[in-house]
Image (cartoon, rainbow, N blue to C red; front, side, top):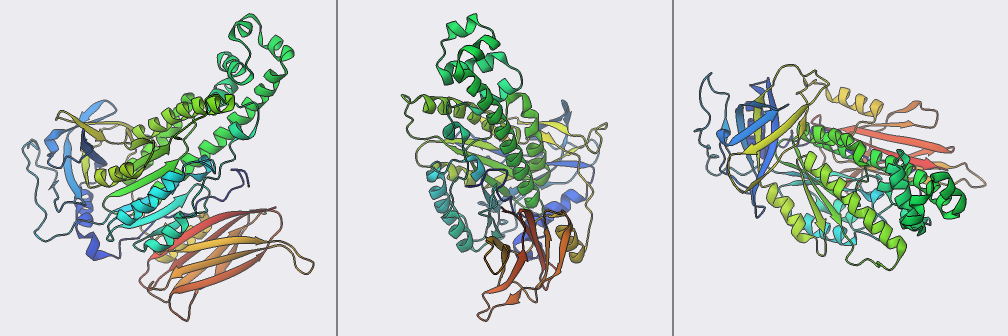
Length: 538
């Protein structure tokens, strides 16, 4: 099993999906147009729930209190994005001095259907041990079956093994999800004596207290003895202490690399969802994000991305039903997982999302995802001066109503000017930068063919585009090999005889090293899809 640093990275997504599905987008696109008419506004997507987790749907602009960098800003625009209920509220920026407090919700026209949702399930498999979280994966299959057939759903993973671009076709996603499993070589379990990620990072940052605590829990050295000796004496007298100190450094490095990959993947998937209008939900199934509390600032990038893209996050983390507390290693891992769980909850809260500690059946927690997504308010507020374009706002959103919970990102970035480009320009940029797009669904897989007596090692790449995509489909393939040079060109997929798919196979000679495979396609209407995958040849 490869290490996390060698595992394939996500093949995700970013672009003009839904923009061609005009009949499904009328309400959401109209809402976006209303906000575009007031370009100085910062927009925030907020979910408001009662104590039972049910959405509160009757709020007006005057009910919200929004502060940016501790300064209260008036709500200038409000759109109610409904999915389960055919209801929408909206207000434009009023004349100067006008009051918004009494502005009533407007009703959606009779017979209008709510906008479809975009839901992406992100399996954080590089944080999950192969024996863990089976219940989360099985319940995820039932969750997909409960999602409305009008909604779009996609699948992503931190390893890149499970990715399926969003579509209304559940079959490819369910086929991948049924094979879902953890992919983490957990050094807390694989190496002895056991050392937790959180204490390892504290010790690696110079905390003598954390290191001594590790000596006590992992080596069984009594606290009384540790208190009487300095570090050098402990390391000389106890062989286990020297082993533990080395393992703490290794585990700290492992945790930091894993966390960086986790957060980078979360941000990439969130940004890929940004172009879709309406309600967007990212459901993360994880074994936890072991970020040291001293580094919690790193969570801000996820919160900013979620706020900018209008994506609501739900994080599910399974806790094993039973832990053998008579086993010292199990006790260390269990204690460490509690600390990791707290940090993961912090990430969800900073990002304006929900965190669920899953014990037993997970279905009820997936139901909360659909409930919270059934009603989201898109708020527009004035931008205070003084924040540079690359800076951020600290955000606080509350509601003047008792016994409710507000889900809103605590950070936001100033709105960026959108740069329009042609389909050809998007494709070129996707191939050059490895940026995923999802205007077209693309399934790409790759395998290494080992060298034989008659032929060198090679990579076989298989690419499929659904047959119902408007043809002809124009394709472009690129690869960045160990020499870091981009090579490739136009490679159009061919429609199969049964019209079920457009298919392309590429065979690449391969030496040892990492290869970044990229493919982009344009359909007959100018929609663009792109995907990328890393593969290691040893």
